[in-house]
Length: 374
Image (cartoon, rainbow, N blue to C red):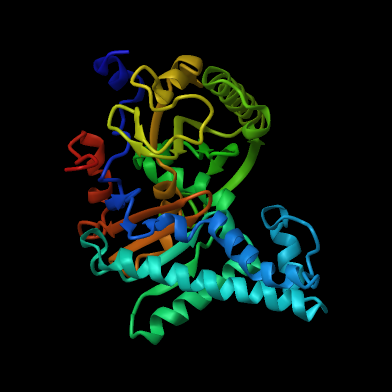
């Protein structure tokens, strides 16, 4: 599909843009390295499981492993959370030890990000991703912040406010131009991950709070595509079917659904909606120059209501971070780290409104915005 055709199907904003209605995106999806490899590998979901395994090994040799023979990667977050407050002190001590080591790694990685040019003068970092959705995740984040503050760092490190599953959908609101919220009360949002694809109808609650702080998920659907191992084409077809179902339900309930779909997707998102790199965990080859998810979805869902469908896609870490915009107005520069299969990251600078009249927010609608890499 030619570029001029892409603009017609997705043309209210640029995919992967560096300038959004409320923030400038200073960087996202940075892949930093040290002597041991990629930094993100030190503070990922898998890294925590590896640390837990290291603490279990010496106990296993003496037959005193409180977890028995269960592999560390298969112990659920809920089980680990229950152990933290349970009566088995040895099991609890193992989990606490793993949390402490992981917090040290998270503090190290955070320190390295803060030293980079792109993250200079960052005042606050929110931590999202699936790992945050647990007591052990919250403890690791809090402990990492204490470690950093003990080194005289002034950085605030805190869990993302919304549930990570919801943050990835709610953040999609901030990809849309202001007029959408004046004319419509909800949008469709998609959050694509290496294991799951989630989509939902997001209520903006614009009339209650124009900063979108009251936004919520009306309904969402989850497909664990990793279990089905579909082809790329089958995955897109299934996603389109899920979205069509949500459109029908929203219309039946009387929602004024905008002709807009916001997509959060792993990887470096190009201006035309193609994926440059970082989508290796998705079903099939999503980095092919012949594949364009926004264009494919626009073909499958050409209209919502009486209007042509507009689609905007951005990096999943960015979109999760965007959900925090209403709550970040007391700082100027802030970032997000998402702890999942890898370590997602993005750094934002708030765009100050012109006299508070919202003109600056609407400036993206004239198409003069910088893109990733400007």
